[in-house]
Image 1: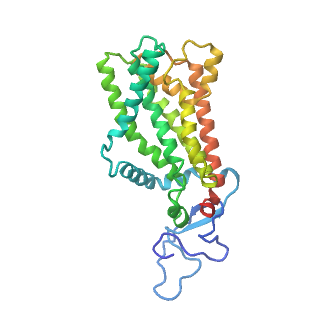
Image 2: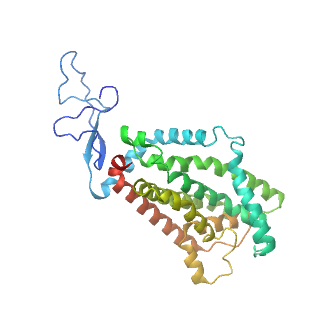
Image 3: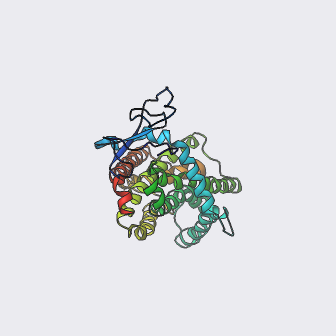
Length: 319
């Protein structure tokens, strides 16, 4: 394939149209110039040649390939940001409107009617500080789960790390997160809440837990959605159930250690509790709960990514 960066198949090579479980391996560059005329020798190739080789077991997870194609992830994320708000009346305001409206509803229902104990924190900031990381996860789960089935041309005609289609909406969601976080900073100033200086250092690790959880869940759902299209109907329900299984509208500080351990199995528990603790001086995050949530996040990430790569070989045939 001249000019495409991929060479034609030679005897013993796997054809590029074959959708077997393959891993690209850059061949060693030949510094000598190609012949000026006549047929190209079968043993000559440039540094841009790509050989596809079958993989087995853990080799299917190709971390080095992700780094090699890292710029593609950036361009896919930029594309998703542009498409998300193209021809919308409110544009990026939707990134702020969702958590703000949900915070107002939660304040009215749980703060004033149910009178949920917020540990002395004003309920609006109690809820909003948890909704900011939650919507990062929830929006990514709903968008990324459909990322493969809406891009059949890319999957069937071009070789690249397919998982970038799953990760691009997640990376694009960082923009929405930062916009919503800006409103949170304004609420902190308005309610005169003093963030805990030491606890704020945990925000990046907490977002790391949220990111790993999101990538793992989205990779699993996206791979399942290729084969079972009813997954797209189940995802909104799953996200809604997960919302109420996560202490976004309520606190778990009054629960026993056993129940806090159970909640810790949900990796988003430590994320929302940690954000509320660090930024709104809410109930503290127990170290055991944080450790358990981190372990759950790594487990979900590993299982989701591994399942994605093991089923990737059938995407082009099924989609």
